[in-house]
Image (tube, rainbow, N blue to C red):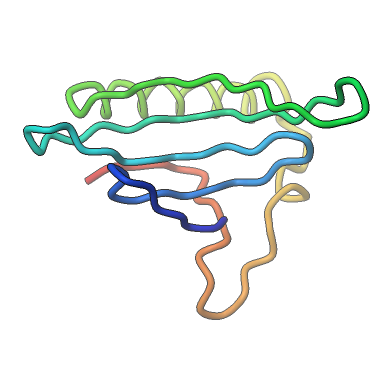
Length: 110
């Protein structure tokens, strides 16, 4: 994961996943309230060049907890009920000392 900043972005993480890239950006409103955008950017080949198809979700602070609970329950259901014998660790990035490139399986906003 890599960090980048934009005009009204306070914090950003990028996750590369094959032809897709996911961006997790914290942005500020004019009144200094904060919200999260989750963007999926998918590279597509079109007429001898690449274009990017983007899908964006806006997540507001009052929904952080509900969103995380639902996401964790959904991922746990796949791992524990639908695919209990599958080794999901094969997709984990290898962590290096001093790097934040690993992704926690349990997300939390405290």
